Image (cartoon, rainbow, N blue to C red):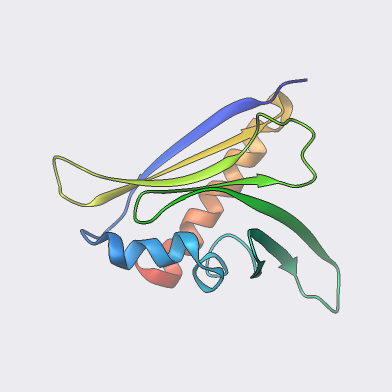
Length: 132
């Protein structure tokens, strides 16, 4: 079954892509809001949720697209839908001059609300840990 696309837009409190971009593209930045720990091995990103010595989940994503200060796209290595990916993109608002984060993800229709809630919680973590 083909997954449905989910898009979330959130205005960030920054007019500098150089401030925002490390939080979207580096293991240290992604660890502040997407997962508890993120490591890289070449073009593979290893995401860990939970404590390693307790119950935890580990997923690996391949880097598909990287355009500095613009877009980063990943595909989960265990995803059976080859058209699915998740993407973090920033664009500048013409009105405020602040950057807007556009998150694109894919999920089964029954899981869309859960994935939306997960990204909303991640965005709260981003705001609380960085002020963006």
